Length: 111
Image (cartoon, rainbow, N blue to C red):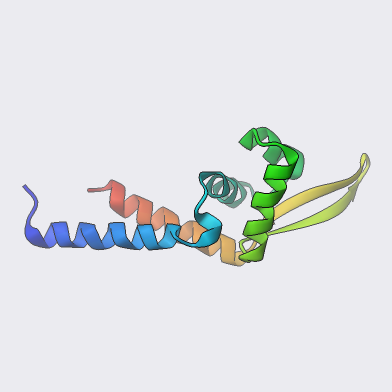
């Protein structure tokens, strides 16, 4: 059995996790997937993100735009041998958001 103090601490951690995910840019599981994938890879092409998420181009563009507006990712066109491609990179703010979410997930999962 867990003590009252442990339950209170667990409740606080769940509240912190809930508040972190209440960030408008992180309200979507797809945007969380994009953020986590970028944190693990540094950057991915738009095409990679299409394959990863299974979304259409318009939907993916909207999700990337919301993440960009929050300063969590940066999208830019880069020139390649095949022409211009969009590459999405995680920003320092995005990496910090990822780290904080992972800490909170870990705390909550240890209970």
